[in-house]
Image: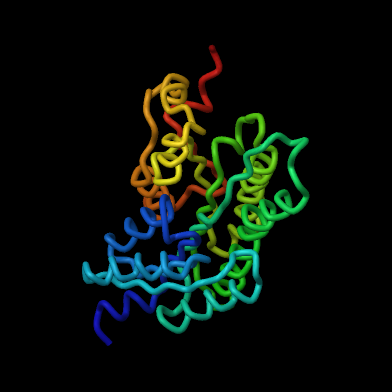
Length: 259
């Protein structure tokens, strides 16, 4: 077995929602560091496009289409990782959806879907990762995608704020429970990040970019690459004594409470 194959068999980095935006940047960051990557995304085409991009650079990746809130799909994704790479060493629970509307107008179906993706999806993937790591007697890392709106509140986002706050507490609970098994669990809490989605919202007038920049102490949006760098750090040996933490990546937004 070649050295490259042996490295791959030590486990992959699974990125949920890795076909676009921040998830794509995270997948690229790990792949460029020599890690095999599994893109788990409901959009099969987006996942395959990232895999093709990485393959064109000589990097190892595979895509699996499915929903994070489906136990069967989650099991299939982890089974593929075991077949191709010997399992999942790092799980990045990035998949999520927004739910921006006045609470009095929020339909039960939209509320439930937000819970399914943003909270149940994190639980199912984290549980499956821990089950398999413990069965193999291996250590691992889980990084959950929270949000600054899981730490501070905003109007018209009750579903998003509630689920992201729950991810923060789930991160702490799992970190404490699984520490003895050698599984570290942390979260990141991004603020406003420049992605294709935020650009579309700005272009349509649904997002006031100037107001966001004024409110952010650093005076700008973050980039997907900046989030990816922090996720990569939390999964690295440099962060081996860090667990149960939620690290803000918001340009100072959540710290600022003056005007």
